[in-house]
Length: 613
Image (cartoon, rainbow, N blue to C red; front, side, top):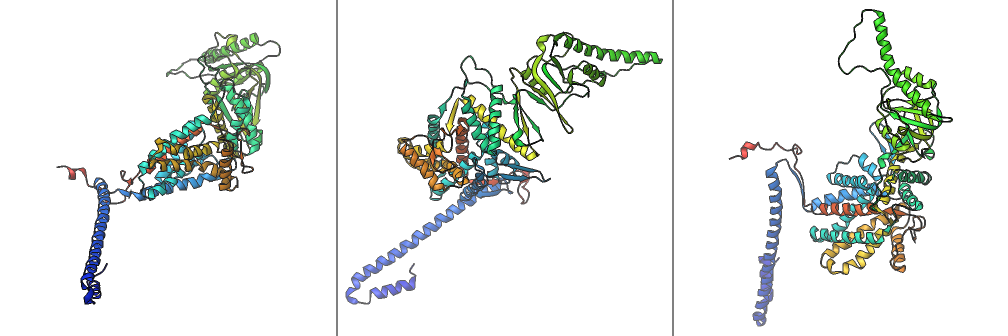
């Protein structure tokens, strides 16, 4: 700005010629007027900046007035904090997505080792300190609890939506406008999902389709050889415990609690298999009992076959040894009579070639075991309650609480019962049952972390197949849905009346964020990301909007449905909902306050009586 000496120089310069004094005096006044206006504008701008700073300090001061120990991150800084936390968590998990993803090794404080690429396991086992990252992790684990899969996708989509919105917010757009665009884009994406989904007959599904769904879920977490082996086992397990079709035509219900997952630290992971029956983690307690029986009647009971103390305080007093012997004989007779009832019932129902198996929830004393062994009865004691319920569902029959009225209807049937000893561990296999409603997945491995990795993957595979039966829909995988939704949002939806105005930018941000899934799939497969995405988009245009995905072997666009790559409908639907809601909430955060009780490190707050009049 021109100061007084500059103004004097200007005035002397323009007034040097007397002939032009009148015109130059006008020019001088114009220059001085511009200089004075510029000074006023700068003063107003300075005042405005001071007002903004004052308002920000006032808001912080209001929180400080409520709690002097509060720690505050306000306005733009809060958005940067949330975005950086989301992108940090995204960078940790994105390398695990898809069948070509890498593994993470988790090491505990005591040296425990866990190898996994399951996002839910990583988020549960990792120690996350950042509040925003903790919020995202809890939302992602909720996705796993609801649908059984999609944890990594939730983290990736949430982080990408915040990243895409950061550019527009930095240019001055209000986060509320972007949030409204996200909501509109999510609703349209769900409509695209419904249009792309393929309905199946849930009551009579194609086995090949269920195997494709299970294979897609398992190959993202296991080696292909083990994944293909467990695919058959997972499908057999779900079809075994599936409820019969309802009369009103509703979707069949699948109770996965009836699938027992038994682990044995033995042999290799490729030796895991499906057992059409049950595997109990206990066996007989008598060396003379048979170790292998065929064509067995199975009796489950909850009857004590051992001496028990009375429930009330009592005593028996005797004056000589004869009375004591009589007492012992009467106590033994009470237990022996119940054992003889079982033996007589066995002789009644077991004809040529049939065997008898007794599984008791309560105890059996050595003398009773010896009586049963002499009769050729296989007896297991102290069975777990969950196993007692599953035995009745697997073998048929009903559990009894008394041996007085034993009927043949209360017996179950198993084609084969045998015992396996692994060191100090004993297992009883109840196999070859006729119409089981419960079954077992026997998982084997040379060490604990291998077994845990297979166990986590099998859990997701079971829920994937069960979700298909309950939804009655499947969606083409390989990023086909994300590319189709992006094309629909950008090319068509942004031109409608519902997307008019600034909300269009939020819709475009949502569409760009959806492409993070196929991009990460291509990146983890070692492909050129931009080329792979362009190939899929061009192929979709050439095929007039057909559902095409990414072939991770070649990087070219392909019909993923023909390759048997299917995704769960409920997983896609839920991760769109959760990611959008979480990203919208984080966008609308304008202040982060650490103001909980005893959280700050400043001086203690004033007592309540100081503020009371």
